[in-house]
Image 1 (tube, one colour):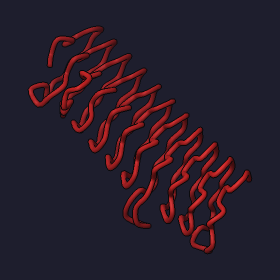
Image 2: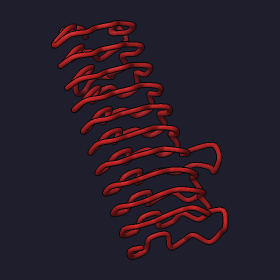
Image 3: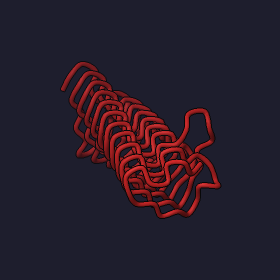
Length: 193
């Protein structure tokens, strides 16, 4: 439903796919069981299966081979998971959540701009407004709270294997020296870089 929505579907391999909104799932040809609701949601997907994109340009850049790449992502919110290409099995909920993710897998980012700069890191859970926003390549983290594990602009931001819970806990963590910590409390570990 909508101009150019699902216009390339040409196969029963796209069974169960729903496209609602201008150019949603526009070039999808054989992706099975996907849902695209919103302006240009799931726009570049061609043969990706079981993705759910709800929101303006959610999962816009998804690509990859059927059955192996760009599979089973859920993105709800404006620009949620926007840059995800071959990353799979991710959950992005909130405006800009997981925006820069390209190949990261098994992530759960919930909150406005949570994990917004993540590119390739996987297996992380970020919950809260701008939680782990500048963490780009560090994975296996848990960050719960407003700007928790936020990172620093212009840095590599590769902190890994951390658990940070609380308002701005581990706020400035940005590289490998900030690995394997458990930090709990409001502003706890803020100066760890």
